[in-house]
Length: 338
Image (tube, rainbow, N blue to C red; front, side, top):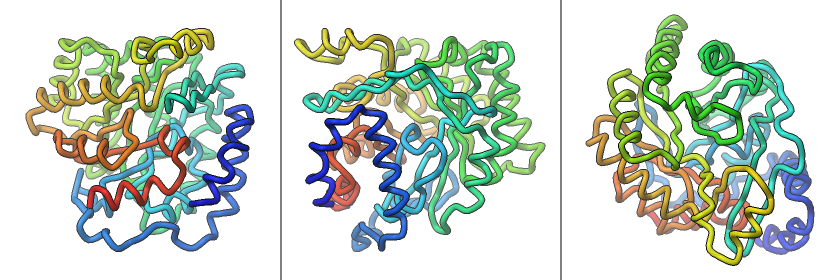
């Protein structure tokens, strides 16, 4: 854990994507290390959610391990679950570089990666070698060139390959970095998408596997309410909130001008905290206990995670805070919420 603190200034001098690739190269070599987390509080943290036995409520959010390459490391760090992806049915490079920016002074990340993915076939093959005892979710998206009207075909193609290898599936219709994707959150588009995915789940004999929907933080309150009703009526298993935000207003001046100068992309990290929490509370109120919610977005401390759980979330996920605070954050959160 101290090693990360020593290396952090050097890593942060690198281009963010180069640093990410270096971290994954090191991570692959660290996968053989012994367990890095303390298991002493595990008995008090275990919970049953979505019909699954989660050793802790804390998971790794989608977006960091897109290809399921570091699952043994995440398990060693003590995560209760890991959401891999977003995985697209066919390989695609994502958006042109530069597409990832860090603002350490604010604990903020801007990304416009654009679903860079090795494709579902490659990721599914890797998942066949996943470590025993780790709960893994698969976060699915459509390819960039696929028209909105044909999005269901992409989600179904990725599902056929990924679903048999994971414990739950999350449908990503809320990334801001694939043109038109967020339009799939509209009730008239969401109803046939969810119906089509649930029909495929039944066709494959995976009725017991949870199917979740990940939502954006930039929806109007009345739209959130409508989406919740569609989700509940559809028969899916739960919701994840939230994805990254396009709202530059969450960034305080004078940093906001610098962030805006970097161009398009979604924001994650500390500045998203208040906005994401407001959205989650609205969703939880509308859900009224009918479906579980996984909290994501702006969580970076034991207090943040405990607050999300106290609000009514069943599970919580982190990502950006792990980049800024290092792998020791996982253990600190577990100790804090125990």
